[in-house]
Image (cartoon, rainbow, N blue to C red; front, top):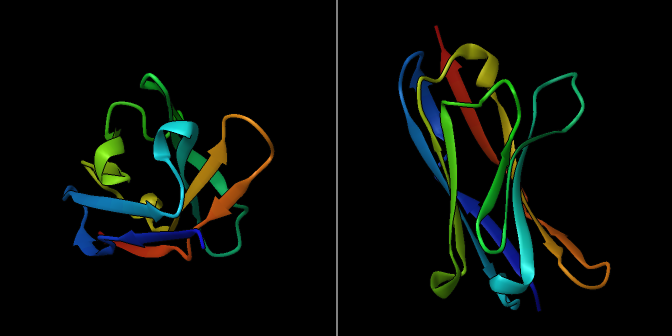
Length: 117
């Protein structure tokens, strides 16, 4: 059974940092593209950052230069280091695993990030 579990969310003041973690069990992470998405109240879910093998990364313009995505295949964990947070970063952050071959997609349940001014 595949399980994708996010952790590390919380409340922080503007300018602060948080690191999110996403652990995937039941899959071989090296065979998946991993990504972080977020959804703010009243808005659509949007891509934040993506990492594929052998480590190519993509970032949304809004987080470029502030967020860093990384992956540890041995630990089946993907991270999102978030720096210089601002209130616009407030959202539920979701982890997504997309199989490199085939059409399997798995989502986590999300973790709340709240940034106060």
